Image (cartoon, rainbow, N blue to C red):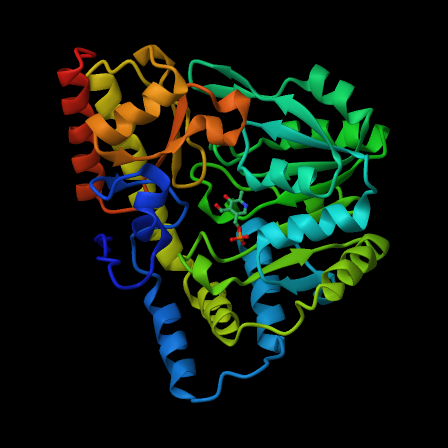
Length: 385
Ligand SMILES: Cc1ncc(COP(=O)(O)O)c(C=O)c1O
C-alpha cells in the first residue's frame, strides 16, 4: 500500500490554513499540528459517505456497535478486557483531561506532569487553579528516561498524575517496568492517574501497555481513534474507567457540561475503523516508521548537529537542535525563514523543551525528503554543515 500526501486545500485544515497565524508566513512546508496528510482508511471513508447519504444529522445515541468496537479493539490490540460499563463516550481527549481534573481534585491540589509535554496538559492544570508539579524527563543523547527520585518527591505533594502514554512530544512508549514503578509510587502516595493514550495505536516495535490494565483501581484511560486513523476533526473519543467511584465522579462532571449525545459521523468512523482498519494500521505504521528512519539516517549521513530522540511511537520526531547553537527564537526563525519549514518549537512544550523542535512525519515519503533537503540546504547556507 502506498501513502501519498493528499492536497488538503479547501478543507480548512489547521495545519495549512493557520500557517500565517502560527509562523507569520504562508511560504513554508507545514510539519506541525498532529494530524497526517494521508488519507483515512477506505472503510472509514465509505462509512462516512454512507451516513452522509441519509439527510438527517440529528442528536445521536451511542449504539451497541460503538461499545463492541472499542471492547474488541482493546482486546485485540492490547490484550485488555474492557467491560462495557467502563466506557464513557466523549468529544475529545483534551476536554476529558479538564473533566478529570475537576472531578478528582480541588483547587490548590497538586497535579504531576512529566515535561516536556503536549501543551494542554499544563494549561488545564493552570485553568483549574491546581498546582503544577513538574517531573522533568531525563534526556541523554536521544534517550529519554524518567527521574524516579524526583517523580516520587513530587508525587508526595500530588493528588493526580497526568500521564502521556505514549509520550508526546518525546516519542517514548513506556516500558512495563517504568509504568509499574510509576504505579508503585502513585499507590504509596494515594495519587490517582489519568493516562492519555491517544497515540497508543502507533507504537512501533513493542506492545503498548494500557495503564488501567495495570492499575485499574486508580486510573482513567483516555483514548480515541483520531490520531490513528486521521479523523481528529470528528471530535470523537472516550474515557475508560474501571473503578466505579472514579467513573461516577468523572461522568457527573462531563455530563454537567452538556456534552452528552454523539457526533453521528464520529460514531460511524470509530465503528468502521476499529472493526475493519487493523490491517491498514499495520501498513501505515510501516510507512511512518520508514519516514522516521529516513530522517534519522539523513541526519547521521550528513553529520547534522541535530540528535533525533528514539521515536518508539507517534508520527512526531523530537529533535535535539541545541548543537546548532541558536536560542529558541533564533532556532524557530532558522526553521521558518531559512529552511521554510513549519515545525513546533520545543519551548511550546514547556521549559524542558527549550532547544528542541518537533517534526511531524505523518505525510508522504516525498514530502519528508523535500523537508530534509530544505533543512540541509539551509544548514549549508548558514555554514552549519
Ligand atoms: C497527547 C495528546 N492528547 C490529546 C490530543 C488531542 O486530543 P483531542 O483532539 O481528542 O482533544 C493530542 C493531539 O495532538 C495529543 O497529542
